[in-house]
Length: 108
Image 1 (cartoon, rainbow, N blue to C red):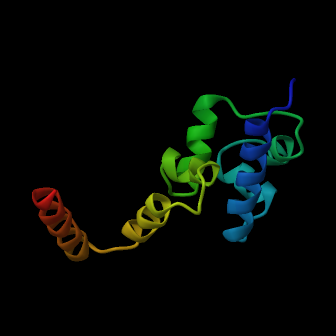
Image 2 (image 1 turned 120 degrees about the horizontal axis):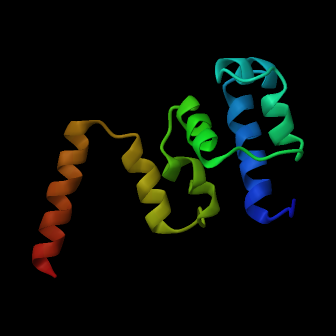
């Protein structure tokens, strides 16, 4: 199997998110209804998940595919920073931002 930057990204991203949740590879594997060594096989480079299983893994972390792959984007752009801030806002604040954007669009 050829090792690409995307293969490595998937492996390291799963490890990063798993560690952030303080969950072992074994427990995560079992939570996904797989053998106890399933995640270890992925993170060690022995295997990659199928597309369906990758979506199951992303769902396990309670995130969207866009959020999972977000680190591939340049994190230092104003667009990226704004997206991160928007994700943490409540509905009321999002409506305010939307109103403000509408105002900006009218003045341009």
